[in-house]
Length: 67
Image 1 (cartoon, rainbow, N blue to C red):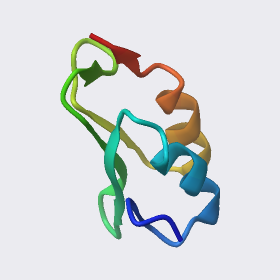
Image 2 (image 1 turned 60 degrees about the horizontal axis):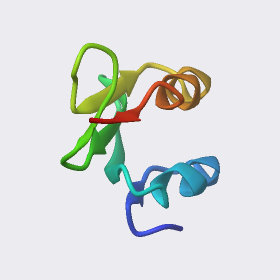
Image 3 (image 1 turned 90 degrees about the horizontal axis):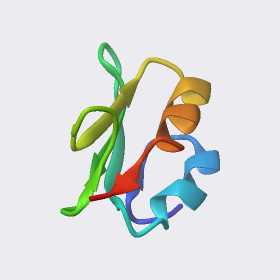
Image 4 (image 1 turned 180 degrees about the vertical axis):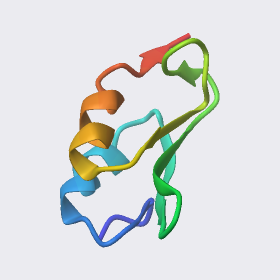
């Protein structure tokens, strides 16, 4: 496992190695999360990516951009 990937999903290791990622984790009742490093945003300026499914999280990560 990648040290920034605190989930059971090995498929997130590639995303965890991206310079924008501070940490990835999951919460049983609150979905999957990616905390972004300073200087990176998603959507309207959010510092976290949050989705309920692995597929949606991976797709949402494609919207991360440097600011």
